[in-house]
Length: 367
View 1 (cartoon, rainbow, N blue to C red):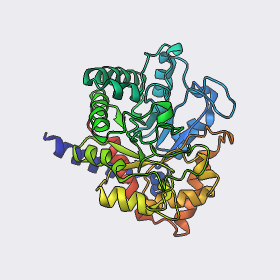
View 2: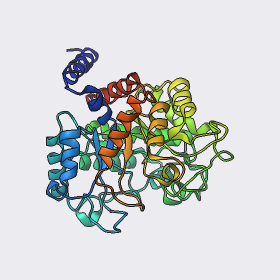
View 3: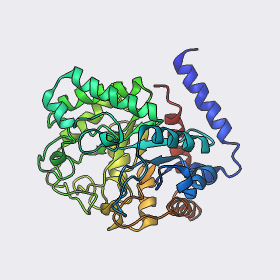
View 4: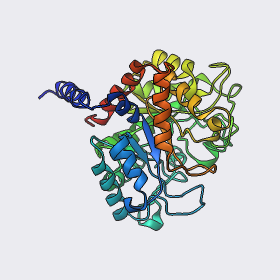
């Protein structure tokens, strides 16, 4: 069967099956939630079992370190343990569960060598080396490791341009391939190809660009109004035009020239206006962590959910792993907020269905 026809058939079959859910709008909304949790096995956390099996959340995000308790392990202690955890999580879901991780390499590395995982190198190291074979070697080894463990989406690579070498969350921690957009695209394409080879989805981040910032959006308000450059959009445009973009992650940076009121993730002008309309992206958009200070210190919980969804974000990522604390009821609270917003007419049912279709299309993507 022709690949394009097969994809259409699977999408139609998938939507037909899901339309039979007794409470479809609740199911659709739950699929828009990705939640972090504690525990290296499911016996340690009955709540996440219920969140997946009963609420039908669409995904989880895994961490090695638990920030609120300043302890480890959180979800990862060995390859065998992680493989079993991912398999057990997947078995709980009626449909495919997004099991995600931030595995960029270098300092952003959840799979540590002391747990028996292969060593990684940073994007900056690979960009400076600028050797396609080296990038391919490390990317393929990383992708195979993720695949072997049962992880199916990697929130990587970081395609921010290294404009401010002292940016505390990008340049200073070696997360950018280069300040040259062509070099970023070159190594990003290799990274994505390697992951697709092992059937791992990737997510380009942090739109519309975090590389020029002087602050860290994990900690609070991050203003790039006077440092951001339009060239930071180039890697996204080229990867999309080349068919090399699986998904995009928004950032919480504020740019008054793009939107005088809201940061990226909450901005209709940036997400819908630039990413969807100007760049033409109709695929899945994941938020950066909604528990980050740039959001929680400036917007209410329900308010931020409404703004992000109406801006055009499809999946709300809640790490549940911030200094403010851990909330075992976070998935239920987020779903309740979403359903209330729908009932109140703040978010339309059509908007939820739109995201649901994008999510399901990505979940059955043939890499």
